[in-house]
Image (cartoon, rainbow, N blue to C red; front, side, top):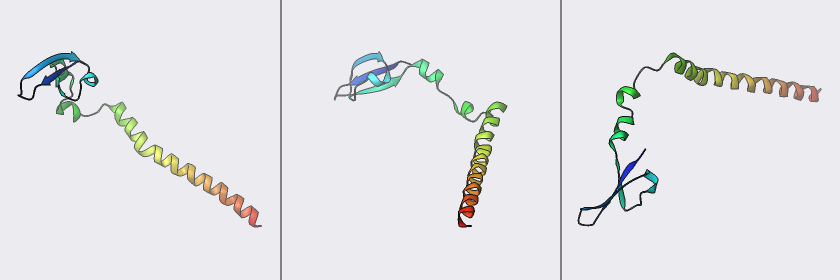
Amino acid sequence: MSYLCLAVSPSGAVSGVEVAAANSCTSAEYIAVMAQGYTDAPTLTDLFAIPIADDLQQAFMIGFALPVICYLTAWAYQSVIGWFEKKQGE
């Protein structure tokens, strides 16, 4: 995506305009978004839209199943370690 780099003089006049990438503008310049940047930006409707079923399924798997699997794995390790400690005490 291209941006406009606007160099502004101390009197407030725009002294130079160049089309470049955002990281090529110097600290003394302002970055302005071109018209294509506004059309590519997500709107509030896009941000609050109902997600598709695949996204909901993936979020559920990450939010619910992953912690349950981690808990059960830790419980299994703890049981095995406890069994070995009990064997050493006998």
